[in-house]
Length: 252
Image (tube, rainbow, N blue to C red; front, side, top):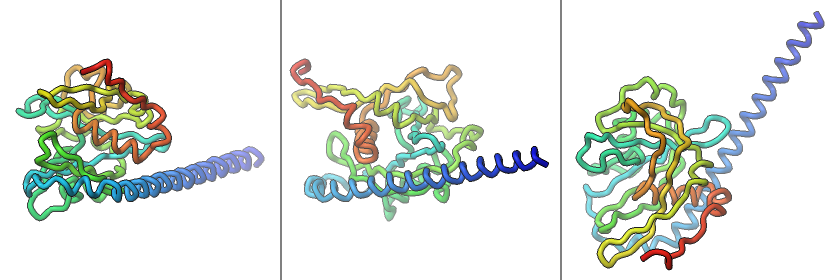
């Protein structure tokens, strides 16, 4: 009888502890989301004029992507895709699931549709946080709208066949991304600019077509710009202290 009582008491303690942890985790995530949206709202007031300046974008050129958050009860990760090496444009590059906004679509609708087509995740399993301000391509001819959403269970992706567009699906912890921030310097004729870059070696492969999986992924270009912007808004308390301004005198 005593052993039964001890076992039952221990089970109750574990159950209550797990329930408390889940409640605390839920509140933590909700607080992160609310603070993220508040920062977005405040920044959009500052940046609104800048985004209205450019008039080159036309219907059919704009794109939307999903920045997919994954919560495994201990830390947040972000899901990325690697484009198939067989694709004519940007083969092998790291990106977020997404694509062109069709006529009559909202950025959110396009991001969810493309996510379903590329990696098979249904929109009903994604909790949307919000849409970040768009970024422009180098020629200022099109915009990309980053939509932020939290995924549900992604374990079924490990068994799902990849679409022809995707080479690999993998996740990277946000802490790892904050640690691996770098700058990359570019010169295009007389035009010089600096962009963020992330070389990550600690990641979880969800699904891949590679016979020999890569040991490192380089996140650069517009994907890195969107990632940089997201980390700045979502976890500034972790991210900003890792960033040191570039020394332009050593370049250009």
